[in-house]
Amino acid sequence: ETGVTQSPTHLIKTRGQQVTLRCSSQSGHNTVSWYQQALGQGPQFIFQYYREEENGRGNFPPRFSGLQFPNYSSELNVNALELDDSALYLCASSFRTGTGVGNIQYFGAGTRLSVL
Amino acid sequence: GQNIDQPTEMTATEGAIVQINCTYQTSGFNGLFWYQQHAGEAPTFLSYNVLDGLEEKGRFSSFLSRSKGYSYLLLKELQMKDSASYLCANNQGGKLIFGQGTELSVKP
Image: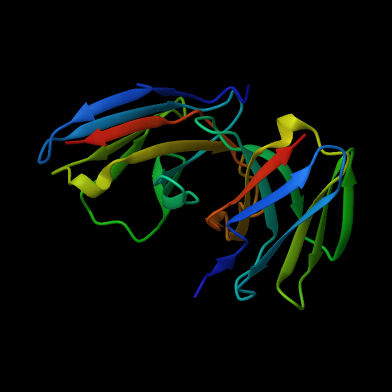
């Protein structure tokens, strides 16, 4: 158990809808990163939040957006869902010090999103 | 680019030793992570290498050569429960760039 919790565990949506995924970070962690993992692939970095601000973004369109709250929990929002958005969405929390490099990221169990 | 390359699949026998290799792009490198992921579960942290050399942690060891852009994960005394996907990740300024994962099957 990493202490990182995600909700919901599974979700089914239709194309064009919007979805919000939630993540509670491990106690004492101040940074949250989101990843998308397609079946049979490694996770792909979406973005990272530190002190309630986006701190780095991967190659994902603007319809992927996020928030971090004062308690360091986070949300991932995806608008105008497409079939290719079907994947496991993973949240990872870490404690950032200094430049933030080298901090171990601990993952939640993920949200399995299916877009029909 | 930020390519990470690792074999797609490997098979080994219970009790044996297996080495999973990973090569990565060296520019902007801040360290190399290894994670284990069982089907349907979260990736779990195994090791983090920043400096060259071998780091041992029980049955698992990880090696890094920064000049060659190369790492490996060594698993000894394989157990059936070690059947999982092993993910190599390049730390690019706090952002993890993952390979596709190596699916390891341990046979009796």
